[in-house]
Length: 303
Image (cartoon, rainbow, N blue to C red; front, side, top):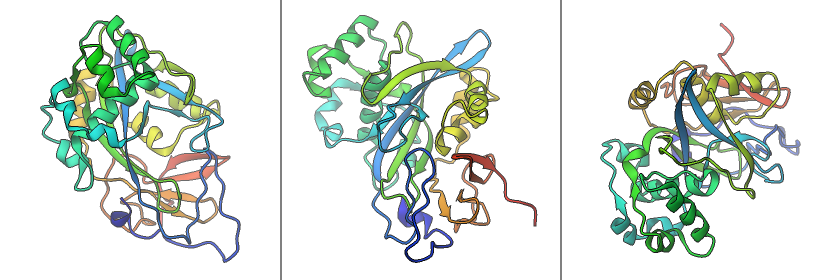
């Protein structure tokens, strides 16, 4: 939400080439901020023998935005996600914090529908207790019909209470392609098999959050800062129960990093000295520094 983050500190010299970090991001600090489009992301969790695992997908490297990055299934909210006829096909969510994560400029129901749809499209997983074969049939039907009509033709209902609000991240104002992404946790629906699509993503995998972070720090894969921070928060968690307790502890206020064009370039989070908002909105380091083409989380140097 651009109006809440304020202008980024610093500016680039006139005529200077915009910084070009990894992930296909291009920061242009001197341009007016674009509106951030509502989006929804689903962090699917499962209990494994060694602890908690998350399902990740790898974005197609040809994508102009976060190409090649490891992300969680998600995407922008479509106009069709706000169709009031979805009310006949869902079990409403009991979560009291939906209005909090939606804020004043988004429809909570449309966010949940988008989260369910994107999860199905990008991971093959749906918030429902329906038979796995029916979920697979729905995924195939979506290619011929819209999400609503496919749900009807497959006689499926969404169980939106399975989507638990977790975080809200907004693309920095200096990046022209901006999204206001709400993150939801979802336990792996029993019997369903995770299978990513082969267009927007290339493949997917289950892994412990700490293992994904270790691969990132070795340079084996690329992560965007919101993905990194979500993994950092989940890394110490060993059970699904604790993961949902952690979700309840999050503020859900928008986190819009401020781009700081220094050496190295920074993405400062609320609460960092380089961010116009003094209030901390998420645990962990208060900034991401661009080092070797990757944004790594770190705290500012001691004064």
